[in-house]
Amino acid sequence: MSAHPIAVSVGVLLTTGFAYLAVVTYRHRANINRLRKNGFPMPEKWSWFFGHSFALLEYTQRFPPLANIGIPMQELSKNFADTEMFLIDLWPSYPSSVVIFNPEAANLATQKYNLPKPAMAGASVEPIVGGTSILSMNGAEWKKWRSLLNPGFSAASLVNHVPFVVDCVQVFCDKLRELAAKEIFSLDEVVSRLTFDVIMKVALDSDINYQRCEHVLPSSMNTITHWHSFWDPRVLMHPLRPFVQKYHAKKMVTYIQKQIEHRFEELKTQKALSETPASKRGRSVITLALEAFLEEKGDSDMTATAVLDKEFSSIVSNHIRLFLFAGNDTTSSTIAFSIHLMSKHPEALARLREEHDSIFGTDITQTATLLKDQPTLFNQCRYTLAFVKETLRLYPPAANMRLGSSELVLPALNGQMLPTEGLNIILVHQTIHKNPRIWVRPEEFIPDRWLVDPGHELYPPPGAFRPFDIGPRRCIGQELALIEIRMVLIMVARTFKFSPAYEEWNRTLSSNAGVWPKLKEWLGMKELNTVHGDRVYQTEKAGTHPSDGYPCRVSVVD
Image (cartoon, rainbow, N blue to C red; front, side, top):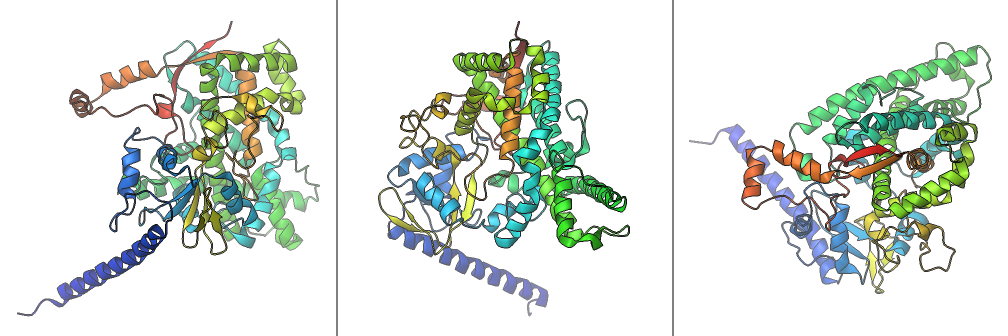
């Protein structure tokens, strides 16, 4: 009896697919094996079937399950101190990449050659952003959109947002006073609500008061990021993930598109009445981007019947989502780690308070008013900025990725010349920021390294500090982040005292644990919850938030 035609067809398709996969896998691994034989530095445990997956697993298992991937990468990097770069082959789950923690080589990739972003840069954030953005664009397209968006994040524009930022931080302080009389709380959650209020105002000109009430946009964004990972297959392979993310993405797009249309109609009305636009300083990113786009198109597109270009509107929506993600997550995590370091280093906290007294006076109640009336006063807080920079050095909120090129052969520290064609390039900022060759006492918190003169042993080496990256594609929201973080420290350092409460948190987790976690603990299979003995570490949650949301207590300083 002959086989059923459908069964035969399925068999042929499966065989063809398997054969194709085998050929592609062989070609890829053969290329990596060739590089390995030629002496390209890489972990020893490499296999034709799994690449370096098990080599990386060996390091990730040394740390808590939710520890940020930069932590095991930093540990792995210690094996390559002689080259300060190595190849890691995680294909097909992740592109084979050259991991760099040499600042000179990093500068070649991001400045001299300004290599393009790989497709992976866009794909890794697509569930959050929704599509193409300046994070993934290259060439002329990137230049066009960067120039459209730059005005909204210029120093001149942002300084006019300072009064609103101060108001938001005042609400944050009010929340802390309320929490002072209560049990332990998640600092990360409270700070995230503050930073979302700020970025909503700057990006969309929306005052949502998220610190006091719920809102659909941050709620949906938080759900999307909860179901997201940049590399963890346990999250990425979850069958429900795409459905949950798409549902909440649709809710976000609906809200953002309404805001874009509203701003467009305002501009049309303004044009019809022949009104002169207000100063560009202090206006929202979306409004300035719309104006710049329409200036390019000409007056004919501002008639009463004009309709907003759908493609433009869609890309603007993607950027708003990008700014809401990056402007909230990375800034809030840095604020949380800054407060942690204030509690951990009382001598640094004392210097912060001394500086704030000297600039704003000893009457703390007048600080907010002074900042509103004289927004540039915070620029005088040199130690505060040094404190923030040192926090960003120890806890950088992101990494960077570029696409290798036949034009770029990287010089390793030992003199080897390493090709990058066909490979991604990953700059692991945690490792660059703690490279013992270029940083004195790299693991220590020393704000003074940002105050010493060139030539001093503590002076930061060129290109070695890159929390927002360096070069033409540095983070567009860098100035806003630094303003927010400094404002929080200025208004919080003299008023509140924070105490981490991880021991209480651990007891709460243990008492509420189910049968399986308790059984694992009884069997001696308890999960790790520290990094090098520290309970506070960066996690895989979006912008490298602190472990367990940083449970703490707060009290008001007498």
